[in-house]
Amino acid sequence: MPDTPPATNAPIRVAALYQFTRFEDPAALKAPLLGVCEENGVKGTLLLAQEGVNGTIAGSPAGIGAVLEHIRALPGCAAIEVKYSAALEPPFHRMKVRLKREIVTMGEPDLDPREHAGTYVAPEDWNALIADPDTIVIDTRNDYEVAIGSFAGAIDPATPTFRDFPAWFRNQRAKLLGEGKAPKVAMYCTGGIRCEKSTAFLAKEGVEEVYHLKGGILKYLESIPPESSLWRGECFVFDERVSVGHALVQGEHGLCRACRRPVSREDMASAHYEEGVSCPACYAERSEEQRASYRERQRQERLAAARGEAHVGRHEVDDGDDAADDDANG
Image 1 (cartoon, rainbow, N blue to C red):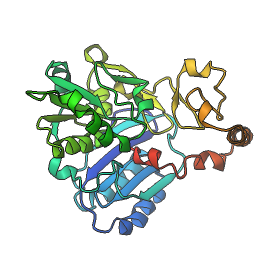
Image 2: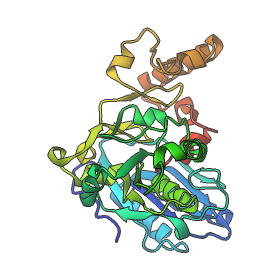
Image 3: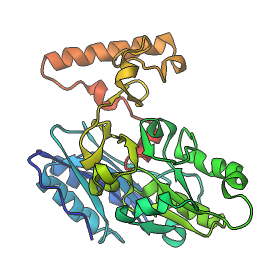
Image 4: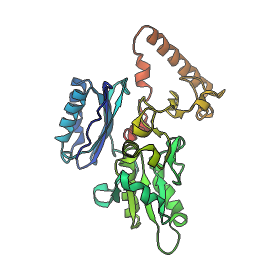
């Protein structure tokens, strides 16, 4: 059953969703889906592929309800589960509906999570599983996400993107699984979609006992009180909230507009941090010419804000960023 929207006075409802299903012609679904979003003032990112739909959207409760009604009418989506949270200000600046080869890109074209996915574990049962010494716990998120929070004792593959996970596992398989009786493998991600796909990958690779956190970190943080939690830090989210903590309260991290990575208070104190221009993580990755361009964009945004206007450059900064889109609801 879909989750119940939160009881809150916050004006913005945020809905994270995904469904592995079969769309014969996802291109035919794009315009009607974008239309219902725009008609109802809903913004965010939704990805369509032959394997299903994935994304996070935000808007008024009525607007989100209208979009979800449309999505639930799509083939195989009637029972789609939605993770709700709330925001005081819009976490997205525009609406994108994009066509993809995969709704979360792993690069394993013959993989079907509907057939091979591992065993779901409810948030209430997750602590017992990962505390079991016969279980190895793997974080399937990107390296910059893991850096600001993870479950105690989890293995960090240090992968820049989800596309890197299959090669990492194949290289580390012998070390991870050892000889004799194979351990149980528990995996998790932000919203459930990456760990669902990665458990399917491991199952196809012959790993027998594979589990994943149902609803991902977000459902765990929503369901488990801090005093009982094994989560440490904050959870990165792919919108203007940047990070959330227990009860999905907005976290303390900011966002580097140059590389879209989270920045801590310590990062902001670095000589390599300049708002809208660079952070310690990306300073060496960018040329001075690129930083000059970002600096001008930041100046234009400040001028627009002083006039009470939205600067178009802010909306377009992540255009073409397939990695960010692929993790629209990680």
